[in-house]
Image (cartoon, rainbow, N blue to C red; front, side):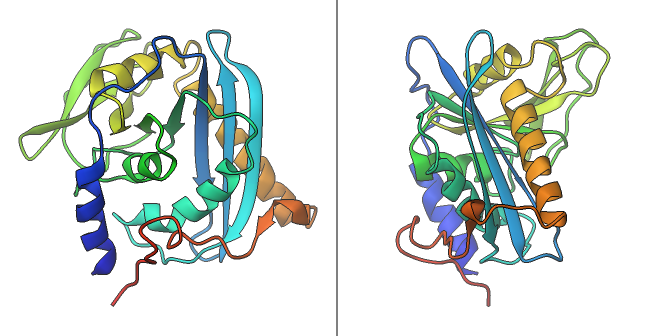
Length: 240
């Protein structure tokens, strides 16, 4: 399958070391949402200023899907809408948190790795559930951690962002180490289980979906021809 071959090629370009500014000033969060039976994909990205996590910028998009729903290849389906929203931002953040996995992926190339390469930014995956691997339950206190291990390799961390709640699953995306990724996630989750940039992006994208369902969506947020192919080696992945 062409998409799998492309994943295996692109993952060699992922940078696993920290390439951050000395002090993070802004962090973005992205969420992509859709109904599998619908042709529409919705994406939202918000930019917050640290340490107060104040809103700096935001953008939303509705785009037609150009790739089918295939587990393990969802970045090909979701990235076009994400890129369209990203291009509408007026502020380039220092770092991006994605609602999904990065290195903790069967081929070590989840959405956070893929999107990080596309925008060339330090990118972190933060998911609500496990895609691959096993872990021991971390301690009950906020900040407790446990390795997420797949095929004998540490691919991520189960992190307790709020005491006595379920952990989130953090993995490196691009231009960031796993240790630093965990630090950023904890810094962005002072009150809730979900880091604030992702939490706000999730609320924004759900609001967009409700507007679309009510027929109130402004055409200014619609993108009819978003294509990942133009952004990745000029090649649109296809299925056999």
